[in-house]
Length: 179
Image (cartoon, rainbow, N blue to C red):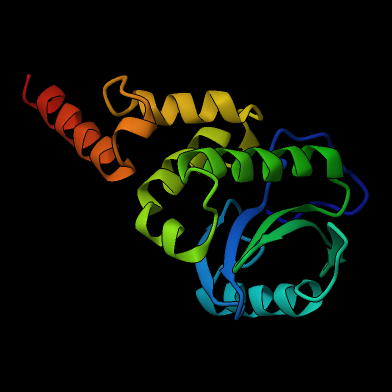
């Protein structure tokens, strides 16, 4: 739904998208929470535009296409959290930092493309713990990592891979369906 420019009612829906691009600006992960960019083609064009505007700068915040973009890069990854132009940058930044710090713990501080690609399931679970339908649920990385681990039978992530966590979650779902 397009917001009426005159009525900016407060909204819980604070995040429009969470993106992770590689150092060529290619999409590794993208989750859009509204229909600002309804087609993949429009999303990719937006991602290209964001990357071109941000990958050579040191700042953390950009205004682009009427949206607030907060971002952070690490080795060969670019992390983006996108909100509307009237969104609180600090709220968006808390989502960005929570995502980055959660992944940093889950990947044992090895936040780079290869490690991320080997642990995509963990990324999906983590983003779902932080943002749900655009609403910010959690900003504490300890809680996120804990909940992702909980989905894998209470064993800390240091003792099992995210793939094992996901496998056991699938098993639990399967058994709960069979009951």
